[in-house]
Image: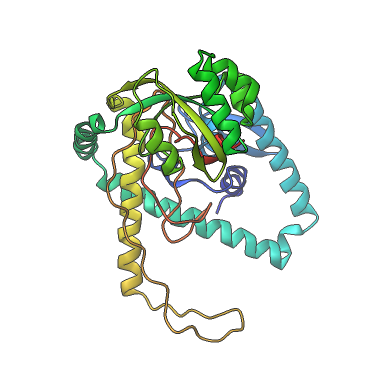
Length: 335
């Protein structure tokens, strides 16, 4: 494998499948892929930088290319200089280093193979069909805009409810009373969320039982403590635009294709598993199942999801349905 590809891949912490599935294969050379650096005779092309960027954290990928280009280029130059020095010191001949390089190469080939399957099977027509299905389901996902005050005891929550009944301002009380750190700054504002978001079920049930302007008349207990909740607004679910939804839908389809292919390969292959002591295990791990189709959740700030290659890839874990924006994390209620 070319050294420049390995360097780009290591900078990217291995190329993530969803990012690959949305990019065309790079063709080094020519006007469309100019040389961007020469380091002691080693040439780097723009495609190398794009490869590294494909596996970078979403926060970095969302930055304007012109803004992150100097940083990415400098990082690649540094990596090449260190790699050249390492080869000169014969670090690349170390057996552990060789094994790690082989492991990286295996991951890249695996992701690239899934990428090739996704390119062949995910058509624009299929993405539009998936979007139509999602759009039909989106109105069912009603959203509420709520605030909350988190305290450590039921009595504290009851005292706050009594103050609210006497006309106290919820946001002001939240800034003063809540133990939720972000809530002290924003008056306990949680923004809009749906019943499908990753929040304690007790909290969701209480919030969706309220009308706009109402607050809970009794404390709500979750693993984080005692909450007083106020609903500011309710609105029917609204589907994201096709442009917003398409990346997440493509990611989910690619993930399902990978799971199906792995199931096929596991069924055909001869797999022998051994325990840490070298003894043969009773049976091989079951083939992964393709995740069920699930519509992305429509939110105001879409963010491409992070997906793992089924069966264990970078990040590990079982594959899940994508979402267009991060759900409110449970610890947002308790920190």
